[in-house]
Image (cartoon, rainbow, N blue to C red):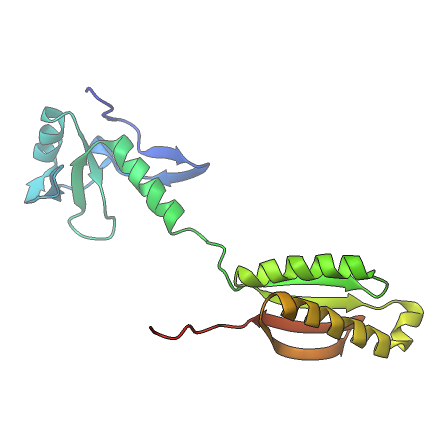
Length: 193
């Protein structure tokens, strides 16, 4: 067989995952519902006749469905079929969604300049559509001075609000070993012109 026809193999390695496909002689059914290389349905055909048609056209007979009786098979180049399946798998794979919660941790003793830098980074994350979980861990004597910590957190939120409009989703709250707050980007609706 010429031009990439694969008569014997049915297991192919795609991105380090093994996926089984029934190709050519590996198809176990007596009759198959056949689709030609142009997507036109030929109908119910015996497996030997379908294999003969594939050989004549220098293509492979690829089983598309498993659970349907008789199975649906298509005449096409198996390499191109694998390429399309890989593209579908990548496209439907997990995507990083805008709107996930990002964590920002500031310390009790953070300097003014560092606080501004963190505020700029936080505003960029808000611009990307992420929510922010802002945390200030308190250690030792710092736990007794929560008023100062709350003021520093409020100042940090104000710095972010000056750069990017945001809204507080969950108020400042004492939690575990520190203070936490959740903010999200404010949706600005532009008027229709």
